[in-house]
Image (cartoon, rainbow, N blue to C red; front, side, top):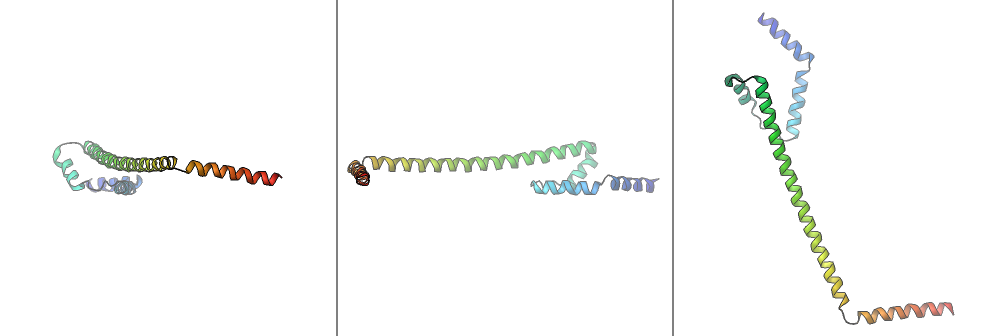
Length: 130
């Protein structure tokens, strides 16, 4: 009977593609940086804790989700810091442009040069029309 149960278990694992699914879960965990789940410790908790395997699996998934959420929060905070730095840099550049524009307005003789260029442009158009 024991041999039959093992063979039946192996057949179910093959039918349900358990190995491929577990490998896919491992790959997704590694992709998301969730690699420090101690499988041996989890297995021993199932054996010695008196909790059901479903409960341990649920708790393990919850822990993995907490870790993933923490990683995502850290990434979001880093993006926020980068965005804030870029905004501050743009504000500094905006102020530099304003200061340069204001310094040009108060430069003596700029109005005279502007007026002379307007007169020159109007003279050139008058000569062309004659």
